Every structure is written in structure tokens, then in C-alpha cells.
Image 1 (tube, rainbow, N blue to C red):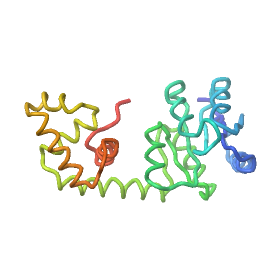
Image 2: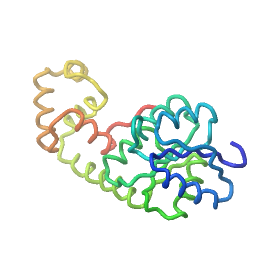
Image 3: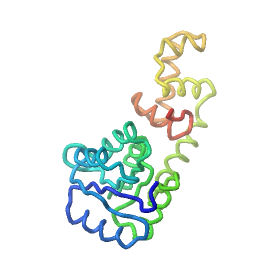
Image 4: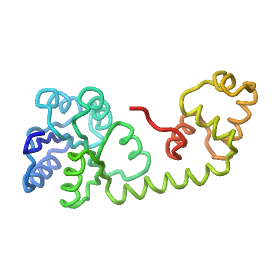
Length: 214
């Protein structure tokens, strides 16, 4: 990494970008080398400049911030992505983290938080605004507590479901019938209050039953 960390800003509001640039220029060791009003433009800039950090909003016309983060994770895994958003809810935060985002700041964050986030991601760490951290912790703790309501077999089946295995594959692996797997799946959904497979996968991730493969 160069002595001065180069940053690209992506936000569809010019005033927000100008404000961010002004704040970052007050920090030692950072330089804004480009701005974009959407994810596609930002991606083109990254391909040209290969900065150390991209700071992006989530909601932009065309390619949004999470799609941009996904693309950067595939093409430029060394580029750190920080999301600057007005959304602090668990769903937005989780989607961002799954997209490879290393930092998540709220738009009302103080300058100190912005600096802390920048220095953290450049070290290879992650940074979440305090309000965001509370959401993540609350989601994890509620999931971990609810897991205790499941039997060992149900937790095993839930893990395999989250890993993408079909009912027949689970039945073969565990040496039980497909009807038994389906019965367990129905009981799991009932006990957790979840109605579909994507919901089960999300829950399993939150509860730490499965981890994302890099």
C-alpha cells in the first residue's frame, strides 16, 4: 500500500460526495482520487486507478453499493469497501457483510468514526458503527437462543439445508427417509417461526451454524 491511501467515493448525491471529500481531506494519509454517482462508474474508476478504499452508498441508480461490493470482491479483493448508509437495520447490514464490505458507517457518523473505519479496514480489520454493531449482536444472540429449542437432529438438518443440500441428499447422508427430513424441516420452521428456505439459511448464518466459504 502507498503512504497515502487512495479513495474513490460513490454516491448519487453530489453534495454528499463533496462533504465526504472535504472531511477526508482533513485527515492525514488519505486522498480522494475519484468520484462516481453510481456503482458502474465507480467500478470503471476502480479498474483504472485500483485504489485502496472505496466508500459507497447502498442505494444508487443502476448498480447499487452492494452490487458494486460484490463485483469488487471478485475482481479486486484487495480493495476495501466501506458502506456509508442511512440504514442501520440488520437486513441491510447482513447483506453488506455478505457482499464483502469491510466497514459500515451511518451517514450521521462523526468524523472520528470515519477515520477509525478507514484506518481499521486498511489494517485488514473490519469496522461497524456502534448502532450497527448492536443490531448484529442482537440478531446473533436472538438466533443463538432460539437454536436451543431445536433438537440435535434438527440442528444437524438445518445446517445441511443452509449448506445448500437437497432433501434427498440430506436423507442419504443421515440414513433416514426423505419424509423424515421433510417432517423435521417443518418442525424447524414452526419452532423458529420461519416460512421459507432462504429464511432458514439466513437464520443458520446468524446463529453460527454455518460459515461463509471464501
